[in-house]
Amino acid sequence: MALLYGLLWRFLLVLVHVNRALVSWIRVRLRSWKGRLWERAMTAMLLPLALAGFPDHQKKLNRNPGANANPVTENYAVSRRSRCLSDGRSLEKLPVHIGLLVAEEEPSYTDIANLVVWCMAVGISNVSVYDNHGILRKNDSRLLEEIVRKQQDFLGGDGSKYNVEFLSNGTDKHQHHVVSCRPTVKVLSPEDGKQRIVKVAQQLCRSVENKERSSRDISVTMLDMMLRESKNIPEPELVVKFGPVESTLGFLPWHIRLTEFISLPSHRNVSYEDLLGALQRYCDCQQRLGQ
Image (cartoon, rainbow, N blue to C red):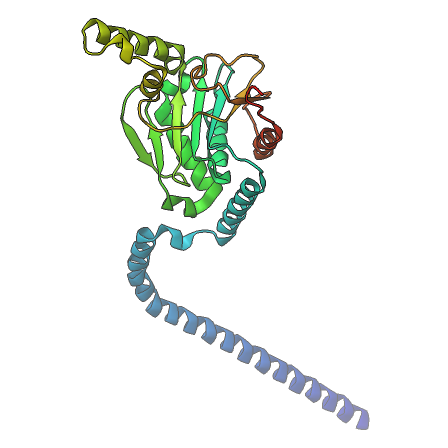
């Protein structure tokens, strides 16, 4: 009989433990269910308010596109600007006017735009781009768009504070666009070389024939002024030639009497270090000027 009571007691203890465990599980499930129900209720109440404020926030972003700019990308652009300025200041001499002579069949607008932006970033204020076939002249708007895009990629938003004067050769039309350092970009073709000298000479001859001026008035200074079109662009101190051709290909023959020429294999996939190396080589050049 005592054994039977003992088994019954143990069975009752098991029932008590099972009951406690079941009650605890039910309480946890109820709390979880109430919590989810509360979260859903709060979401239903707050969602209309959030949606109501979204258009105003979007308008603010539209008015201020730089508000959602990536700070990492902006810091990287600042670092690149600082490096380029530091490199430019470290050079013993920096050309005021640099020419980029593309002696290759098909120009790469992306690589040429990179070169132009790098030149401006180190502090060169006048850049002339030349190809012997006149492809860049015919597509100068495409090149300008690529320059502006590369400027934004390389220099970031800070470059938008400055203007670039893009000169359309053969006319006096100027196009003002955003690049940096208030530079001047000029796209050249063979029409600006020997053909330009021939046209100016013909113009002078006609003026003498029409008795608009005397032959005694014609001088080197007058010819030089007419060739420069009164734009006050200095002669290029340095021309970087890209390609295997060992020739100036008619690049401004009137203006390169004191110009240093440095050759690079190709303008395609050219790097900033390649341009910096050419500028360093220019610093090592000693111009004796006939002495």
